[in-house]
Image (cartoon, rainbow, N blue to C red; front, top):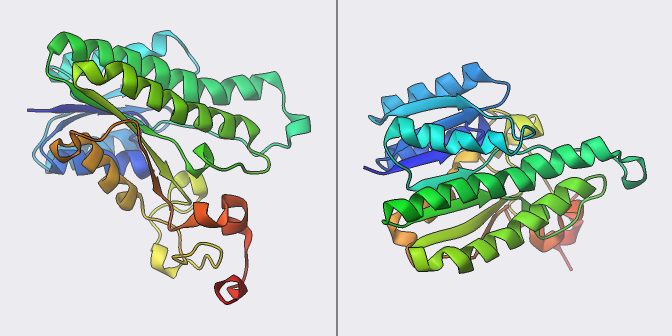
Length: 261
C-alpha cells in the first residue's frame, strides 16, 4: 500500500488532499502547526475512508530539525511514496516596512522547509527503490507578483524553480516532482473556510468565483498517482483563470466590464 505525508493537513487544501489521497487508497501522515484538533479531525476522515492515519506537529521555523517529521511519519506508517509540501504562511507588509524576522520566517516556512522535507523524503524513496512523488503547493504567486507579499512571492517563485531542479535530479530514481499553484481558494488562510464558493462573486476572476480546496486536491491526487508517471517538472495552475488576468487585477476588479471589448 502507498503512504503519503501531507504537511499542513489540519485544514483547507491540506485536509482536502489528505482525504482525497486516502480515497485513492493511501495511508496518510498528517502534520499540523497550531491546530491539533483540526489535524485529528483530518485523521478521522482518512480513517473513515478505510486508510491508516498518523499525526505529528511540524513547525517549519525550527529548521533543520523540523524536517525530521517526514521520517517520523514514514516510520510510523511503514514507508513513504508521496510527499505533499502544503504547509505555508504569508505576510501583507509593504516592501519598505519589512523586517528581517518576517522575511526569514516566510522563507523558512515556504521555501527552505519544503526543500529540507523533500530531501528527507527523496532520500527515503531512493533507499526504498520504488520511486515516488513529490508535490509542492506553491501559489499563483509562483508566477505573478502581488503588492505587499514580497517574501511570499520570492519564496513561492523559488519553490517553483526548486521543483524543476528536483525533477531533473530525481528522475533517474523514478521520483517525479511537480508544483500545484492555487489561486484564491476558500480556506482558513483566505478567511473563507467551508463556504459555498458558488455564492462568492469575484468579477476579476474569469470563472467568477474562488476555488474549493477539493478542486486543488484533485490535481494533487492526480500528480501523486500512477497516471502521472510521465509528468515531472511542471507547475499546474488551479486558479479559475486568475493568472491570465494577473493576480493583482484578478482579485481587485469589482466589475465585469473587462469581459466586453
